[in-house]
Image 1 (cartoon, rainbow, N blue to C red):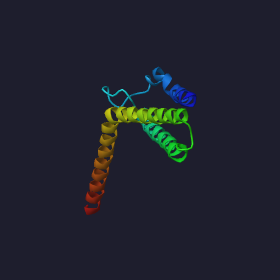
Image 2 (cartoon, one colour; image 1 turned 90 degrees about the vertical axis):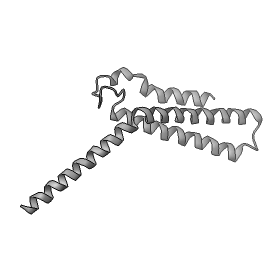
Image 3 (cartoon, rainbow, N blue to C red; image 1 turned 180 degrees about the vertical axis):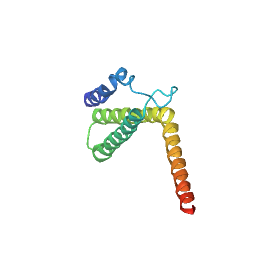
Image 4 (spheres, rainbow, N blue to C red; image 1 turned 135 degrees about the horizontal axis):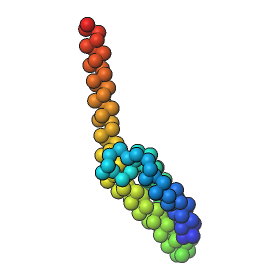
Length: 124
């Protein structure tokens, strides 16, 4: 469990200086996270899911050979990592997903407009 606590502290250290991100311009005044922060959150989801999966694999591989305290510690670690992944996923879904989807739609619309302009220019 100490290993999990140290891991969480190290990972959260990057997010501890949240005030440092306040100066960066947000995409919209109602958004609390910018694109960079959303990508960091997405990376956090991937990291925590991968870490939880590794612990689950370790339990599956060695669980029968280890004592009860080892199993309890590993299950606690795996569940904590899965919970962190779920929490990061919720933050990403609430604050980032719509913003990213809107950006993709805007880019697609711009490309379509550019394509139509080129098509019109060829006609002339």
